Length: 492
Image (cartoon, rainbow, N blue to C red):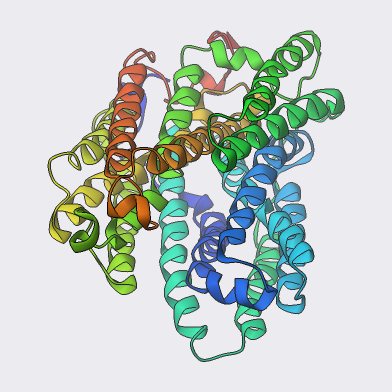
């Protein structure tokens, strides 16, 4: 369907109910992501470990998320997106229920990593909505609007989670505080089980276990190598070897997938003129949305009287910056479908990526005052919210029928890889070049912060340029509800 044939006003219609239930799921996801941050020091004391060991929690969860998304996305296409939502939520709930009742760091770390199964929720939800709306007019617009609501619920949950977690940890025992998100996830399980209908016409088939093993080994080696680089520095040859092995292992995986009748990931999608730039955009976007948040927080906390840069904010003032950023993301996510309908999805994606780039480059001249940083983060947040909502919806609308869940999941996986690379690079940059008080203390170097802002701005603008090469009709409804194959042709 051409853009001109798309209805001028599109509503969720019969999907409003299911989007409401899924919004609760994403609210829960947001709570999980924001709730624990204020109590990480309390968790470290409870487990008897150093504060630095808390970084292993994030690292293991990111690694597991990169592994589970391809498998669960493909299984969602094969046997039903709701079914895999139920399974992933049950696993997340079980892991969450372990956290309050253990004082073993090893057990806590394993449960924390397994809790990361929630990362598959949003890709599966977008794929389910796309599948359920197959006979509705304005399918792409409906999916984009639903994605905006889901991302708004996600960011709202993150804000509420951070605020509630911060309040409860000051007044209740840790085990009770940790029990709250676990019970919320259990409720989430029953909401999906009884409130969400299954996506129609699953593709069936058998899971490509060889492909899954190959890509899992590649991802473990790659992310593990990056972790070693960050811990040991760029002078460690072993870390470089492990990282290179991870990259090289992608080659046999791709060759296997090209020969497989029903691949885990149809690698031809990366050559699609519509999907290829979306995946690259997701990776470049991951640099800022996943890699830059910790440096921004530490820059705000750095005392300018001691180090000559930073804002010297308190914890509460820093949380306000993060809160404003998340609110801007909500606004960006909700505005995306409206602006996309008034212009075009491709142009809106380009504009969102450009906003992210401009916001980070504004840090170069404007970083000396609290107001300047807040304004910069609002600009970044508006673009980031739109991209978080738009990328999986854009992937769903451009993907082959049998790879809808896989395509939406790939936006998440590639974004995670981009964030992992950025986290490694930024960690090294902040340690390098520290002089004077910075070298003696724990603050990152100012040249490192400049590197963070330049890289985030440049990668976002590069994503905007890449999206200029996407076909003008991309991410719109397909003619006669036909499915588009990975090469961009129409198959019936």
